[in-house]
Image 1 (cartoon, rainbow, N blue to C red):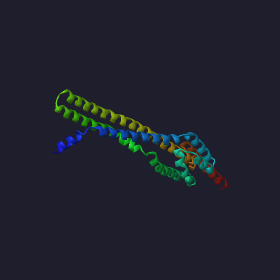
Image 2 (image 1 turned 60 degrees about the vertical axis):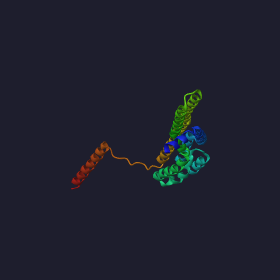
Image 3 (image 1 turned 135 degrees about the horizontal axis):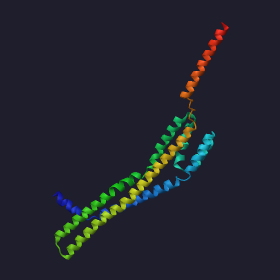
Image 4 (image 1 turned 45 degrees about the vertical axis):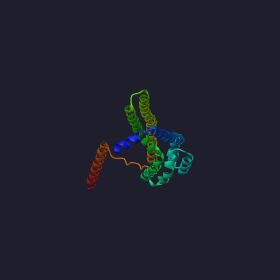
Length: 239
């Protein structure tokens, strides 16, 4: 009974699978267009921003740095500006503030990528499902007879099965390419923010005390011995 009911569902055809794939394709291209506009708008002038920001902060002009960041539309400026208030508290506080701000912005950067990843990984299987339905229909028509009309239905079902596979690949490939491209862009922004964070932190690192090298240690010890001998000679002369 169960097999018969499933056969009835399969014989309805795979046209609905095609419409589902078309819908997923429209969604996929819509997400890619939105992400492209987002990153294209916020990805210009990063190198110039970094150089000017470091120059202003190095000169102690934090107000000028804040103004510079407020005028920039880059993601880096969106992350660095709120964290700039932690600059007077030291390098560790600044680095923590920048990391915290980036975690908040990361959700906006990743928006839509899970949709592309899901479509890219599952579209071939949906297409394969349509292919299986087409093959089932072909065998069902083949069982009806082998006259010209039945064979025509068989060939149509096989063609429908192959089209389902092709549509699945057509939907999956652009989605995977888009996912990988935008994921790479997110990683580049993360590296850029990390680079700026290290440059700013280096401006407020305390000076490292000079340590005595072995050669300097020997010289210092020799000078101490000479001073001790000189003191003994002076004491003996006085006596």
